Amino acid sequence: MRFPISIKSAMIWPVCAILLIALLTGGASAKAETSSEAAVSTPLTAEEMAGLMGRGTNLGNTFEGNWNSQSYEDVKAAVDAFIAAGYTNIRIPVNWGGRGDKYASTADEAGHFSFSAPNVATVKRLVDYVLKDVNVQRASVGKPPVILIVNAHHEEWAMNAVQGEPAFETNMQRLETIWTGIAELFKDEPDTLVFELFNEPHLSLNTGAAAKASVIELNKRAYAAIRGYTLGGMQPHAKRIVIFGGYNYNSGWGLYDTYRNPQDLPGGGTDRYIMGTYHSYFQNLADHLKRVDDVKREFSDVHDIPVYLGEFGYEHRGVITDTLLDSYRQIANKAIAGQFAFSVWDDNGWYQIYNRATGQFNALKDQVLDKH
Image (cartoon, rainbow, N blue to C red; front, side, top):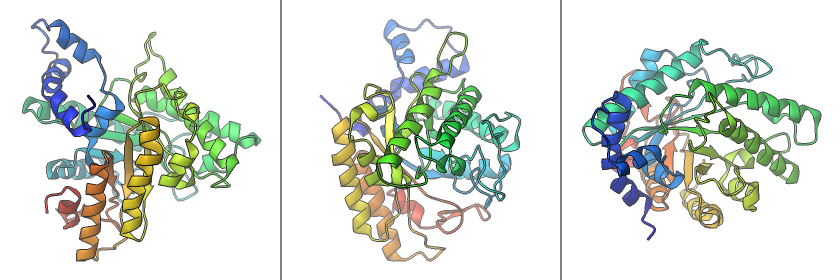
């Protein structure tokens, strides 16, 4: 019997919580039963992970932009607030390769970056804090873990050529090097860290056969760099959940139009540890809701792959109306009803839900978390 994702997660988490504490705190003096040992060694499938991810948020315009403070203390305060509010996943957009003069590059032109670079070190520290401190404490009181998603965001340099052009191969090698570095940086993290391959791919043509083929290749190359990362004969990310999107800026239509053929999927259609993603920024509520149904019918049900709504919202600029509140509530609940995980877009600016200066949420929080 195929249980709904939320039911399956509720069934497995009480056991996993006990095992996680033993695993992360080293309290394994008591000999585990054979079944428990098997449970520890069995990673969560993408379907199970989507259930744990549930309702989340974005640390927008932080490590991929320059709107917000990038200091560890400031970002940690926001992370703590999101977790205390009840968000169960946090997406951390990260720009590694730079985009123009306004956004300094972390990696060099070949894709190599230093682990001691300020943004890199801060992101690593945040990930360690949530996954190795917060989640251990949550497990000790029977709470499910907070899931973190780290991606490659606003990598505009990778969008200036399509497959078949000389620059495309150079770009792909650079992307592979970046993801190999990310794989090295997070080699010791538990599977509650999820990788998202590339934010909003659009390339120079945006749509059409060449752009579609190029995004398929881009995702395959980044995926292979993650899965193929090897350390001491082991591949620590062989079954880590990997999220991928389609062309046309991660649109819902772009996801299922890019992946009509299961052989084009990362892993060739046989990997149970992948998840599709799309973004939703329509002006009309009906379009948001319809896209959930479209993506479920045309992608998730076709490939039996769970879906993550990685961004959605309205540019409200602080004007919170009853219509806006209702729209956020309906979109969030529609996604959950479709068995999608989601992360609402919060940039502490035009799409703000949490004010990082005052430490206060606006009324959109309760709508997204269905606590109204």
